[in-house]
Length: 385
Image (cartoon, rainbow, N blue to C red):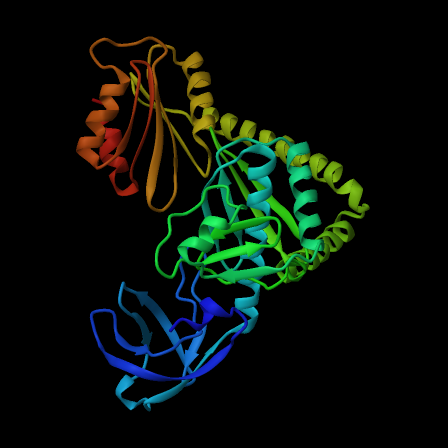
């Protein structure tokens, strides 16, 4: 019997092992009664113990729930104490109830439909099939926190078919089936759900958005509630304090300080890139009458391309190869100021790929490739042909 389905606040129970054994996953037991939520509906399974042994995995089938343990289950007594991690359980109760509230508010205010939902130890989110602007999101949060502060009762219902027909708070009434479980927030929402929830909305404490991700046709709302929200706030405050001390600016000056720092970094990156381009040009060597090669370590493709064009101004009728290397690979750029119909650059790189286990491609006049560094000398001989 699933005691958690009737009372989310139960943290332990003494029960009987009804089956024990071993399968391809490992050693398992089955229990007559349980307080352990097995996971589902976007909510993770409880962290729990059987006779002091941590449950490693929970596998639920139509007929049974298998609890996998890293011990010889034959050594367990017939009766065992099953206990959950209450701090984690209550966190998920707060997140799950908060999700119900915010989702229903989005449905009521914006006719949004929930398309996906998920909770983890660090993040909770759900996806809606509409896009919301900043004002709409603020409105949804304000309304959600009003519902939380209204101290509305949250009930677990196992209705009969007749009782189900009398409920009027559904946005989409479910079809009746035996053991249908509903979560009802008084005068606000009712929905089919198998997860764990608080008894009163006040226990959610508060809800806030932690991130909003816009997609082509949907929006993902990341949120935090209750104790998790408070912990994140405290962590963020510590980080803000550290940043303000390091930057020597007040909190409201951090954005500008960060922007100025990024501009400074961008400037020096540009200076480094210019130096690398000039170094490639200065190092260019004429290996054959028609082939010029230059290589430095630790530069980017853009600098290889820019340097190749500059070198081509000095050697306009020659094949230019600029390259950068590390201990494992050689990245190179080929450039011809004027296309050679007999030897288009893209085809040269594709042939090199086949010969030297490389990758890359290009157009008739330019292209980029990568090969194992051990193949460098062979590539240079190929390009000089």
